[in-house]
Length: 306
Image 1 (cartoon, one colour):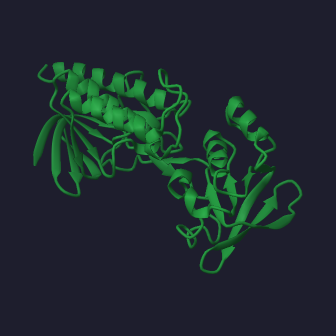
Image 2: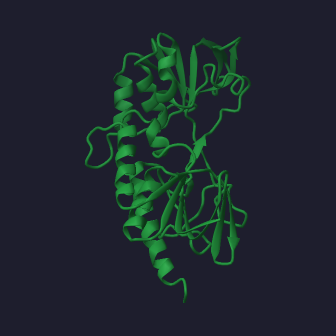
Image 3: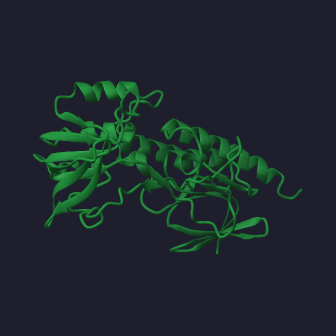
């Protein structure tokens, strides 16, 4: 069993920031990441709302954050955190490769895309249904592409997909978007983007790959079949918060509830970024959360023997 003073679970912007501050405070800090540092931002083509960078690729920003954190001595281990248990005041983390014991845990596990839950979606995942435009967009060059959702992610990814698709339909269950106004303005000005309002995808159809989708108008109940070569749902987020072997307070959506110091209802356990309950999901939020949690964990460790 390996021991560290602070363990951070998740290597997105929040986790890397927490790791940087914790290591800079000369705490023995380990970050566990199951894939690659960067989290969701590594799948974002362009970031233009992070202060100091008018325009930077998500991958480049993630690499800069990782390099900065490692500079201060952050150790990064590629391992999954499958379960967190309590051992008195200590926390035990069970990974695929090892078991870890620590005094403080910062949970930065993010989440995953919410599924449409319609027939054909799972069957055609990887065969025309995708949840990452930057990962898979190039596979659908010359195709008609459908995007589902009305928030920032849906509209931004829809515009990105116009690089490859002959036309991009953005299907939204309401008659107006939730995306930021500046993003809406760009989408409405893009000749390749067409909106289908008040509608929901009810079925994904095809043989070896997706060929069309059924769309139901939620006001008239009329169903139309739309020929598409790809479908990208961006309808929400499910937090990765089911890793505790003890009770941690969450809201109805599964988001972890914290106080202003990012602390959960369990002493020495913090949650940051997209996995915790907050108003919006932005890189800047995650970075601020990570800073706060690292400082709070440092203060918590100062009182460990009290």
